[in-house]
Length: 303
Image 1 (cartoon, rainbow, N blue to C red):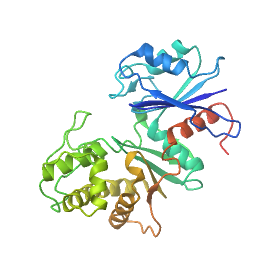
Image 2 (tube, helix red, strand yellow):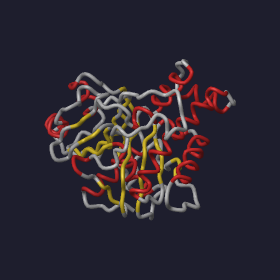
Image 3 (tube, helix red, strand yellow):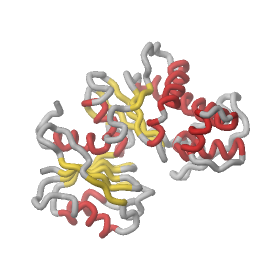
Image 4 (cartoon, helix red, strand yellow):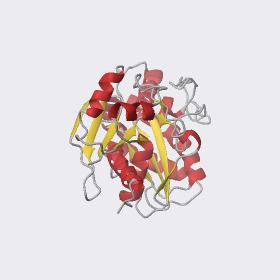
């Protein structure tokens, strides 16, 4: 039986592909970030005793041509040929998909984007990521980077003169001014620190915002303005029918509603219905996407 994994910087989640095509998380373990052998054991110990394939949703970029992963927050995988090394260590076939792509595919096939021609699934959490699905299939692009809207030095901290008091934030990719550096949960925290000199978590900031705190209101206004401006360019480029959201901030319904309204006000198309919404698989997109990848790879079309 095929085992599916969702591998992030904090946890390795796993579940078995069921006969009805679904996968339910059956457990999780902390990700062994720095020890390759411990990482292999974490996967091996959660597979069945046979030689069935495993399907993995992996945080970070993954180049299918070379098998090399770019996963800065899991050092033992970073710049490693994860596909070749893992197949050799496990003695079984391994399928690997970027986690944002897995989420986008899950939404396009069985979630909020089912039956819709273009779906742009986005991750708003500790980082910013994205995946594109067209007619129920992934758009992977060169080096597998399609949909990775979080990187590229495009952010204007003044939002065209609307904002003040924000600096140019460096990104983990080595550039300055990436969407990931500004519009992730960490970016929200940087905005708050820059504007108010207060180091709060994104959860504390959104909590204070709900309570009407003036400082948090200013932070959320700046955050949603910057995010909606960046997202509007992607919406105009791709023309998605829906933009489902996953990641830690996806649980903030009022925040997503504000981002949605601001984004729809900036794009060329007239979206009468909400565009930016919480994904049906916001909590399970990696595993669900990995299961769909496995079903496609082994000849069973998704239902």
